[in-house]
Image (tube, rainbow, N blue to C red):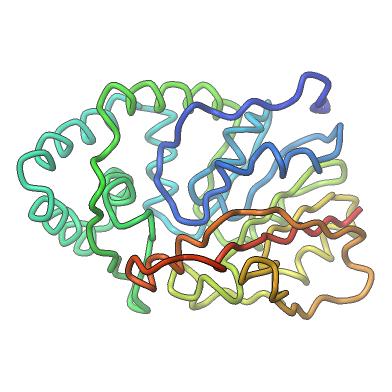
Length: 286
């Protein structure tokens, strides 16, 4: 198994397949700057919108998530990208004619029969990419006001991402199962639901941060390097989020400026966002 090298550096894709609150698309350069220069496989147990994965574009990668339709969509992108493009194209034209009605119909259909292509369309047309679910697992985000990505751009993005993800295998499974696959020399990047700010988002209701820390400790003991993105600072750096983390688990801590919180924008219904900038915390086990 060969090791990946950062001699050339990473390049971010030109656009995103999913529009997703919490995506690291804008900050991928900053985060990857803290990655080790060499490692074996790249592993993500909370794949979400996949921005970090597409930026790394690993020769050998593993990506997992507990949301089945999400993994379905990623597998379709790899195996039959034209299916996703055709699905998006059909609904794009419907959105132009009747955006709210089209969104409501797709949302109802998805909640009745969850599936990957509909989830993708919903994330691109819902409010701010806020992928919000009820405790019963129903997506509940209202429609957005923006115009969806053009068909031409979406097609180009899908094909670029297919090329970038060709070395990755996707799994519908828990983060524990994905991280258990990591071996000595691998790199794991964790971007779980945030403790203080993402309780309304998918999977957050059942997520246990302390359990994740236990699994990270197990990875570290096996010689796996782990990077964790988690709550850092809010209120433009004035308030640091307190985390209960075992002493010695992480060797380094850094903060990444993320600009104004889109989740707060959603919750405040368009009010002014002055003083609402957030900073993510990066924790590294080496």
